[in-house]
Image 1 (cartoon, rainbow, N blue to C red):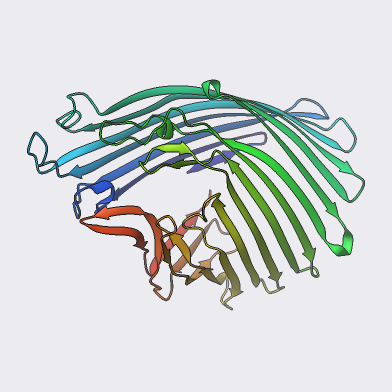
Image 2 (spheres, rainbow, N blue to C red):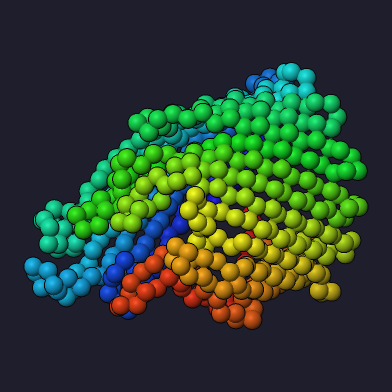
Length: 425
């Protein structure tokens, strides 16, 4: 990760590569085979420039590039096929490249208003997927790859927003966004926000927004002779959200916030009984979040939060969706120069799994972190312990049949230690 900034420009670069060995027989591969290796990498470059056109107009320009690659090697036992080979490596390969340019004009010529007009163009110049059996093409089907799909697409976005100050206590935000996705259609996305400072009664917010999510090329085009997931008829999802928030200052060092929200998703992309991507029924989510924060003059901080929620479609509650969650963070000075200690507690209620047929139990975790940050220095170091008490817990996973055993949950990592150093220059 690299980032540099000038007076009116900025540049950032991110490059990452990850690799993992999977021995748990996912996708019906050979169990305990270290030949199951998955690697992905991505590179992001972002260049921004601000132009002060005059006293009331500023133009923000942004140019970005991205590249992504994924390679998976999956060992299978194909000894029952026409060519008796006990171990064949199936290759999954993805390549994606894109670039885009964004222009955003901010105007403050009107008293009490802040206009933002934006236009963005994004070109997905490469959206390629390939699947084949090494040395066989498409094993037991053809000498050519099982999948060789090459696509490209583009997106044009127009946006207008006005932030209006209504008196000393009320702020109104009105916005409208238009997206053209080519063959996937076009979408209008309005948004509205109202903030009112009621003095001793607190700060009130009302936020309404709409959005969409277009299906990925994987959801539309991943089709092989032996296993098909992609569906070219899948349509984009549409989302509406409404949020009501209240914030109350309890003195100069403490605050209390509460938020109620509702989400409504039409045509949410899911899978049918055969594993094919489809647009499902309407999905909804409702929730309440409460958070308290307290600070002290000696640098100590306390933050605690609790949430209760529901997410499901017209038939049932979603898997891996806890009804209740709680979190507590406490930061304390240790008495030693530049050294602070932090304690975090997390609690998650039980969750459904296996399409509601099973349930994983609730669990609580404790994490500890020590941070040494000398004042005036460009470096710092930290030592963190996750899952301090080595709590054994599971997370739901998609149903899988491994060696005749039904697997719908997966044990999670126990106690782990992370030592980290940071240098700024």
